[in-house]
Amino acid sequence: SAAGGRGEPTDTGIPAASWAHADVAGRGFSPGAAARALEIAGWSRGRDGVRRKGDLRLSFTLSTSNDRDRVAIAEDVARQWRAVDAEVEVLRLDAATYIDGHLLPRAFQTALVEIDPGPDPDPYPFWHSSQVAEPGRNLAGFSSPQLDDVLQRARQNTDMARRKELYEDFATFLIDGAPAVPLYAPVSTYVQRSDVRGFEASLLFSPASRFWNAHEWYVKTRVR
Image (tube, rainbow, N blue to C red; front, side):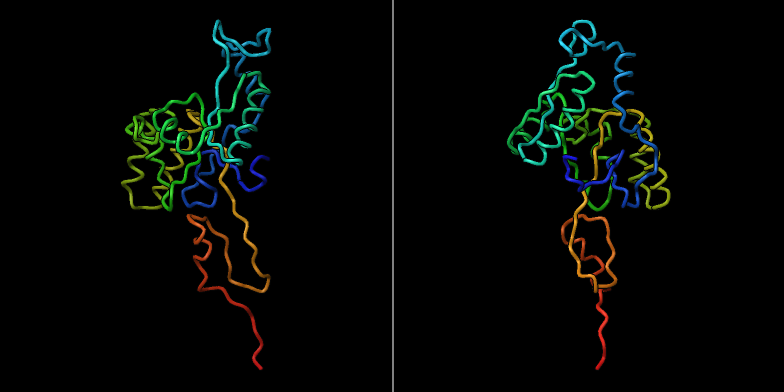
């Protein structure tokens, strides 16, 4: 894949290694189902090979920063859209222009965005309706009273088990509404000597997070 195998699927943007991850069935990847859904919605294939609905063509740009890896992923996504007869152009912008002049002012048609929620996977800043306007981070402009209620209760609750239940509700609402398509959670590969014991893989919030249990690492030695 464009991510070079350094990622794992996620349907809600919360990594599987997170305590808040919900095992909720996503939409899956099916170009055939996507094509059928477009047909049912009235988007038929035009003479030029691009789908139309009346006078409206299914033609748009996919914006991304000009980072090499981001561009490769955007091109791969665009290729998959083209396979169901959409006309998609990848728009590459330098990082500063992309964020300040394009993403935050909501000047894009579709966009490839990397989200780092930090140690606490609270999705409120990205999906609550109060964050729709700039400088909020609800870039999709998604608004749902049910989702708002779940997100508010989750961030006000200190019971981790209850928060996990609420994030399961969040996952269901997000997948049903489909305001965005989470692609993957990045995975980092580290080389470790085989004789080092006690090492456990964990969710990384920063490069230093891999040392979270370094005090438990050990190497077996012989006493002479």
